[in-house]
Image (cartoon, rainbow, N blue to C red; front, side, top):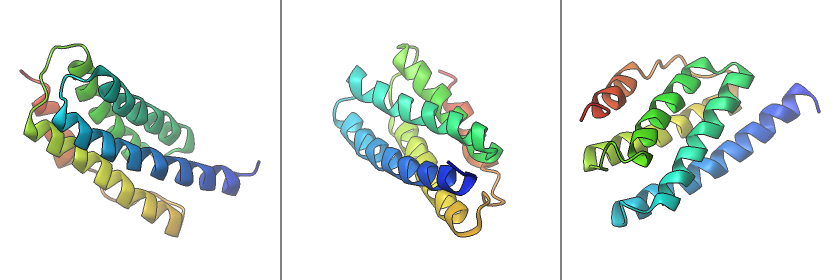
Length: 127
């Protein structure tokens, strides 16, 4: 498998994962204590983080990692899901989707650093 095929597989799989995580987040709003849904979203961001690291998409890796950290605290019961958390996680998915579109078009991740969103995710981790 060459690098173009690897990149195409990454784009297809990532878009599918993000679509599923988007649906899962909506479902989680209805059932905030559903550990299965929470675990599914966590796995999505964990997978995305690893794939981005492997492919050298460092900015997206940081974004995915920040969302994953928040989800980890939710899974551990250290935090309870709030609307601002859900909004921030939806923003993670939206930004990742936009970045994937850019990667597909140019082969590179966008210049966006996601600093404001990463900062917001970190702030939400303090109870």
